[in-house]
Every structure is written in structure tokens, then in C-alpha cells.
Image (tube, rainbow, N blue to C red; front, side, top):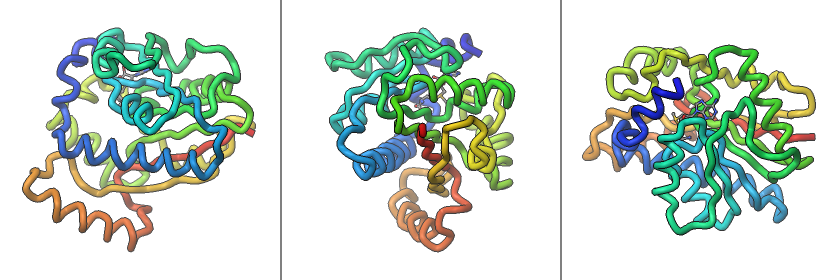
Length: 238
Ligand SMILES: C[S@@+](CC[C@H](N)C(=O)[O-])C[C@H]1O[C@@H](n2cnc3c(N)ncnc32)[C@H](O)[C@@H]1O
């Protein structure tokens, strides 16, 4: 699987249309910023786990956070470094199952579409324990995943998405259920909130985009997002 991401690293950013990527980047990073500001001034030092080509690192650095990142694919690390050239961001190779940082180092960490690449529930739990280890007490962990608790998006991710992108070609997806996270599978890591959002499919053409964004925000309001395609879970280390 590591090889899979090495193979696609240089083409990764072409896998999802730019306007969709930018839309998700803005939305997810703004959500994290809002929650970190609400949590207090001490939340400055962050870790991007499975940073991919480094767009989120760049955005969070731009917001003023002191960022560090890692990914277990060498190719992805190279792309993330190119993306963040000249910035004071440490980016290394490493796995979420053995995070290359000491205990209690970070005020917050996040992982975006990484957890479902871990092949078993046991490994996903191990990953949560590793993140718990590197956070300071009171530290926040944001998990971003696709909302496959909604059967429509499970179908989309299993059958439609693979026809439009090579990202999930490695056949190891084990979708992470928000319902499972809510059960607090790791002692001391408390799920404080789950935010659901977005409805727009990746294949939506650019010319339909402005109108669709308005429709999306309307849908988010009336369903309180619960049926949305993505979710962000906020976990706190007690
Ligand atoms: C779908 S990509 C998402 C990349 C990035 N987070 C983003 O949203 O743009 C998944 C990333 O997770 C990384 N990854 C998969 N398993 C990992 C693991 N066990 N530890 C660290 N990174 C991992 C892959 O190399 C890849 O860069």
C-alpha cells in the first residue's frame, strides 16, 4: 500500500478536480481553525498525520500554527516538501502506527482520509492510541473521513469514486464509522463532537459549482449536515 501511494504521489493532486479540492481544503481547515480558536490560545503546535502532498500543512501554517507533518510514503513526503519549500515545517516519513515523535508534544493533531487505509479495526484502535500518546493533556485530535454511515456515500466510495480516481486503488479501505468513534474506543480519548458536511460529488463540473455550493449550504442547514458526505470528529485527550 505504501508503494501504491509512492506510485501515485506525483499525480495525486490530479486525482480530484482542483475546484473540489480547494473547496474541501477551505472547509476542513476553517472548521479546525474555528474549533482551535474556541479551545483557547494554547493550541498552537500541530501535527498533520498522513500529510500527503502537504496542502493542509500549508494552509494551517498560513493560519499561523506551528506545523509538523509526516506520511509513510516517501513519494508523498517529497511532494509535501516541494509544496512547502522555504517554510519552517518539519516533514518526515513515518506511520501513524508508530508516530515518529515523543510523547505529549502536540497541542493538536489531525488526519485527513488516512484512517480508512488501516486494514483492521484493531489497527485503527492502535492508531488512536498512538495519537493519544503524542498529544499533550487536553490535546485535540481531528479525524476527517467520508461519512459511510450514510449508505449512499458508502456506495459512492466503493463503486463510483474508484472509477474517477486512483487514490483508493489499493483495496485496503476499511471505512471508519463515526458511530464507532462516538463510542470512545480508546480510554481517555473523548469524542466531543462530530460535524457532518458537504454533499457535492467529485465529478461535479466546474460550471455547476457556484450554484451547487449554495444548494449544499442549504442542505447542510436543513439536515444539520447529518447526511453529509464528510465528517470531522473532534476527540480530546483527558
Ligand atoms: C487519501 S491520502 C490523503 C492525504 C492528505 N491527508 C490529504 O488529505 O490531502 C492518504 C494518505 O495517507 C497516507 N497513509 C496511509 N497509511 C498511512 C499510515 N499508516 N501512516 C501514515 N500515513 C499513511 C498515504 O501515504 C497518503 O498520503
